[in-house]
Length: 157
Length: 167
Image (cartoon, rainbow over all chains, first blue to last red; front, side):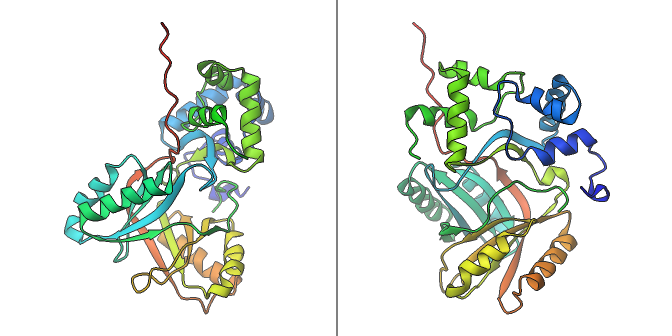
């Protein structure tokens, strides 16, 4: 791995835990012990380091990333929000438990969010509700095909 | 693979992440009233079947210094979109590559990619390299840099399993 792109605040162990275990996490009784063996340290150090990375918000979780559409339904949606209403409308959108990502982006359509629910009907109902309550133009952009196999994100990008 | 009732409970139990204890799977299995072995088998089966596309550390780009996150959208002729999508999806630094519907006249773009970088300049440089390497000079595109992040968490497809009250 190119060391010159490494973030200075990460130790070697932290870098390896972040970069090397985004997929194929050990499915064995003591996964942290298995990782410790690979990296040449001990189980408690692995656990403590992962806890520290979690506490510093660098790891969101160690767990599954589900393939879209296999469980339930989801869509990407965008709203064209007048600049002076953006905080208010962002808060409105955040209020839905079905919304799991919500970003401001530089565009006329300036609020982009992902809606995930148990069914297509439930997703559409949330979008109808947001459209009605916000009064903004809305794009509903469900995924039609995926061309990227998610292997995690290499830290040298 | 069709998830049975037990699989659904397992997916709900693991979706917020493993506890950081020496035997995390045993802890989750105990809460579900199943064996650790069964839990591990079902996670492996769901991964094998592609319901779980990966299982491991889910990092937070922003906190790791990737401050620029750009959605790059492309207006690709319909008969080229699959080939272009596969070419773009193969680049390391592109984290998502999806076809989505156009919504004319409001929205002309049908291919969506995500590029993360340390700052705007590195994202713009990556994009220039990608456009040249993939031969996309003729494809109209727009970069939508993110400004504020109002919410980010894992998708919740399932209700958490109901706690069974012990009499």
